[in-house]
Image (cartoon, rainbow over the protein chains, first blue to last red):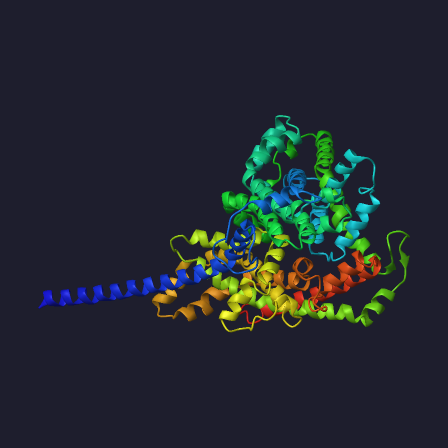
Length: 303
Length: 308
């Protein structure tokens, strides 16, 4: 009697478990189908652009899953065959990104230190003034920065070497003071134990030494995340460089790509090759460092 | 902050303390100086000078000439400007769509499935891609014989006799789709963080008590996400009104002005017509409009909140 009952219950339980597992599997399959469909929509344009850029000829805009032929002639065309070859833009982008990231991180890391860990008159005032700048309307920012750049004489002709330097400066200067970077790094500094800093001060360490030897090393994860975000932002930005009346030789990749789409309007495949070259480094950086990205944007919004 | 007050200070002699404070202040300002100089030059100055410019006539060559409210009076009658504002407001349509889809996608990738990391990464790829590339890529995708038309024709949604970007009736929506496509991954990450802060216990407890999935979603998940929804929809409302880069790369305001947005007006007045004062005035009006819609958005997302 009892044994029958137990086996009955066990059977019911087992049946329930099976049906639940089946339902679970069904749910998971449905989830994968939806996930895959979204992934297709997100990635296909990249894939399609890539395979089309490899084709020598054919129906360029046709939807496809494999290239009709493979050649590197479109890449050769954009790398050498224009008035402004892509390798030159690549150098420009590298210079702008390096200077920009180093400058941005250094300035924000320096400025965040007194705001987080020093006591001086005017600290709160400065902090709230910077905070206010973030919300004040700045629709005319592009216009006024353009005027400022012209008035600073950064685009005047002085000689080939000096012109190169001032034009790089004209592109990079407006993005060097990053408020988001300042807040991110300040937040990291706040977590540094004050005893450490006090001990160093008593030992007679200069503030700059404390900053370099204590604050920077202890905040490295945040600083790295910010540096990566800034790199991507600088690599991707094109509007400012397109608006400035720059020497075409000075354009960074993203801005230069739009220039290319004009010159290559009859051969979009070459522009596609260019687009691939612009995206590739970012995808490489993103793929290898992606956890920093997610942390970075969460922090940037909360900050 | 009061916790971090140095405890040693009171023990020091007054004179030294003051000297140390002065030196501290000096070095604090030295640390701040480079950042603040650039901040003032490229962030603070545009706010003030830009506002002033709105009340002037200025072409860069001769100094700004104060004209009072003339620019604003002209804006009131400028049909091109208002049609731009209309397009920008139409663009707000993106906001509810992108927020709902992002929440759905975030819930989807929040499941403990195998290989879910791949999907999260895949959805984020458009976010890290430049609008220069994204815009060109979709321009090619939208070509008449391109993949977009192919899919829409197969689904029976269009005849495929034109490109969506060349048709004034559809161009703005075609651009909106690109904004959506590029933005979902960004909001997904924010909602994912929101979801993970809710905690599973509450949802599990409700499920055990017999709540349906929909009930769990509306009574636990959605209220838990409310702070994130508030921030995200505010961000996307403001960027919808100020939509520019997509337009600049993809359509330049065309065809026949159908994608001519408010900020595109500002841009072309400044950098095509060289009317910097007039462009700045338009910028001020756009700022006021986006502030208003930011407030409306705040009201809507706060509305229905139990503890508000």
